[in-house]
Image (cartoon, rainbow, N blue to C red; front, side, top):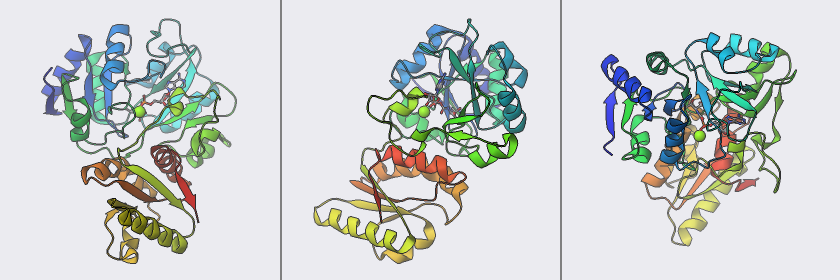
Length: 345
Ligand code: TXA
Ligand code: MG
């Protein structure tokens, strides 16, 4: 099939909404990453998302809504935690997990009693959902296992020939996906860190838990609270190494690993904050935001992971950052992209 890449004009958003009503899948921008949207109440349409992404069939999808009132039509109960957090962070990069009403198609939450719901703040996403007239089931618009796309051309690279249309709405501002929060209990539990930080949730609810898989690999045989955490994700084709620790030994170790890879005939690249590039000599570098600016690092993370492949590097050596604020989501994605290949100095 031919994939149209179109600017998100009113006319084109209307055409995309019509495709969705007819059971097709469309690529569209949100404030976090691009999504692949289909009618979340149409099981056949939802199956097409899994096919386009080659997504494991057991990995559930988030339903995207345009009005907060739509939440109670999808879930059995809006708990006090869910009410407080959605009041504070919707529209925005927060996804709540709650018990699903029985009419939600199993394809959206295979084998689970819960469902996840999010109200994006991106105006194009909002208009698309309204015009389609249904909640949109929408995962990130990458092929399964690849870095999530933060611009329309990255969606095209993964989805050309697989979906009929991609709406181009420019670059996504947040750059990492939404925070998935289990709101079924009396304390919010972060299953996947994202655009809304633990500190932000704590300031609303007083306390918050973070699933241990945020920064450590899932133990063998363990059941993931969020099925997506089980699968390999975000990975470029190149190998990745993350180096963590105080700046000076960190840069030294990164340079040493670079030279070893070069000596073996490989083509490494260093991925580090712009300010430190002068400290690593004449080695090849990809500048990654500015020191201490985790928002800028989040915004550019996925495009950098794709860039490592574009320049045909064999090894990406990445500077670990502090897992505070947005840094938690950044390190969660980076460590998973690196399959937890990490060195502490
Ligand atoms: O920012 C975002 O959340 C983006 C944009 C497009 O909205 N969407 C996104 O969707 O990242 P996806 O499918 O790539 O990631 C959803 C994550 C997966 O890890 C999935 O396992 C988890 O949420 N999830 C969804 N429904 C769940 C459920 N009922 N129980 C546990 N985990 C769930
Ligand atoms: Mg994803």
